[in-house]
Amino acid sequence: MYASHRKYLLILAVLFAVIWAALAISPLYREDWILENLLVVVFVAGMAATWRWFPFSRVSYTLIFLFLCLHAVGAHYTYAQVPYNEWTQALFGRSLNEAMGWERNHFDRLVHFCYGLLLAYPIREVFLRVANVRGFWGYFLPLDVAMSTSMAYELIEWGAALLLGGDLGMAYLGTQGDIWDAHKDMALASLGAMIAMGVVVTVNLSLQRDFAREWAESLKVKQTEPLGESAIARMFRRR
Image (cartoon, rainbow, N blue to C red; front, side):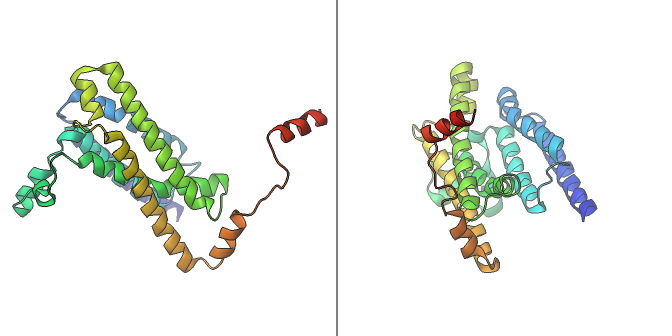
């Protein structure tokens, strides 16, 4: 089983390397491509360094792979200029924006939604296997992390745009003139994570025999004594 798991991860890694390398050739805006890939390099390096200690499930690796592929496409064209309208025009004879009545490029919206939809489950796997969370917290905490990291990324974008300025800053920020762009991106990431956790809840509710008991147990108060100043006082008394 371990050899099969490793082989599957290797296949995904090779596929992503090929896709990433192909999209690294002549990106629309090289400086923006570099910025967009900084966090990807750190993330992939971290996963490569820890895979023996913490191998994810094949489901999680597949979801991560799909998200990284979407990000690679966005980095190649810059998110605001991914030509999905041209692609749908060529395939179906009508652009997606025309069919939906949209005016802006919505590829960035898709990726923010997929951030929550595709990465909430791998985040849940970390919480279950490292923090040993159970019941309600196994669904709430992945949603919480997806929401908070989405917010953190918007702050990074804002800081980078202020630092870089000019066309590069605007290309990286990618608001396309929408003053509520960051809010909508965070909302979509949150919605994606909610849908992902909703699916997991539904599956577990139908298959996990002790689902109700585990859920109820996770919401019980484990320590009746208050913390804060009371805990500090107890620590002083024990010295």
